[in-house]
Length: 217
Image 1 (cartoon, rainbow, N blue to C red):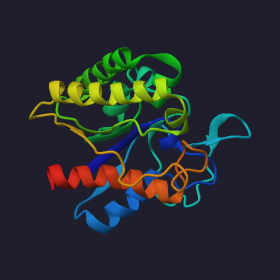
Image 2: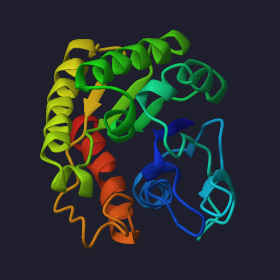
Image 3: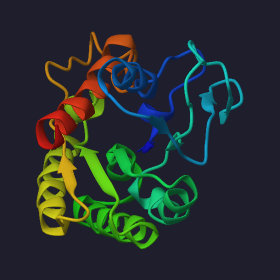
């Protein structure tokens, strides 16, 4: 059984009424992967705007393994202390990670965020020295497009992220940097300039799937 654990912020947990890119990934794996697999993680819910909390189970399509390690407003800073236990309990084989926008927007600069990437990787490997990770660069949002200084921070972090993953990559525990989603458009692939709509969900899932297919078959 191959166990994938989605790890992320608001783009990954999703809001009440959405499918999420996690569901799109599940659909893709069902259609293409020849072997048993599932999604794992300590959480299952969506974010509910009415309660401003992750309390919703109102998925647009609930019939899939909804487990994840994602949170609205959470980043590398928040997930680094949680990932060791999550990997151990879920016996995760592959982490699909989309983090960083929240960190840069509210908590840490690019260098500090890269330090938290290192802490995250070390913690995950304490739980399983052979765990694999596919990491998505920060997808620039409407703020990065309108605020030049923030856009520069996103660019600087994505460069540091690539260097950090290359530095930490090991044959027994590979770290794979995915490419930014192809042709991603803030106007057509998000509903608010940051969070993916249906087409955006497909593109995020495809970024992970393409990276794994190209690197690992």
